Length: 304
Image (cartoon, rainbow, N blue to C red; front, side, top):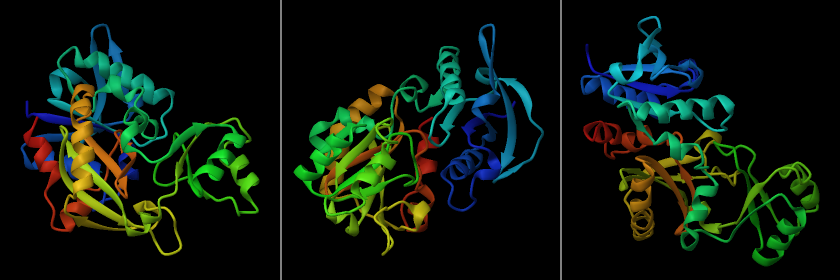
């Protein structure tokens, strides 16, 4: 049997060729001599003492063989969890099964038991000396107090991705109360509030780490009419060298990432502050490669 890798990801039809990191990882797998297979979280089932998966072999973003049920630990050398937030019940159930499958010999990136609780927004709270002034609350009075104390703030939903649902709030905004009501769903939804960092106009740096080692930085510049530096909403990205702040922050988090089994991670850094930790499906490797940076996917395949 030819060695194979499994990608537990969003539907293959939703992945974008050329820029999608999951497809780049699968390409690196094939170039290293492995078959690439994909499945959804709901394609995982447990039979007595083994995880079985309805796996589909693919090349690029095209399936090349019909799916079939296979014993995950017997068929795959490694599995990579690459499902975008927000997470739901099927996602969590899949992680529980993948966690059990690790005990049968299946290697899973990133560690499923960690992914069950490691929220990409709140994970930074474990590193309070590295982050900007930050609060998590559903209370509008608390958010207004933060604006009075810190000035302009950024509001983020705890379960979002790609810049969706992010607002900038300032005291002189006549729509402030309505904005805070919308962001918190009138006090029913917890949000993260961070001090707005003016230097985001100079770039929101995505530092990509494998096994705690920083390999590359992608500097993302917001569009002129945007406050968000997400590539999904038009940010311009370029490969840049690591700087002192990048290395300081990476050094501070690397050992805990290794202990938590977070093997492939993306850090978001603005003006020397850690603002987010991407652990479910970090992106940016294709943009790094296109800008003359290292082939990060080839690097992690070598570490298997």
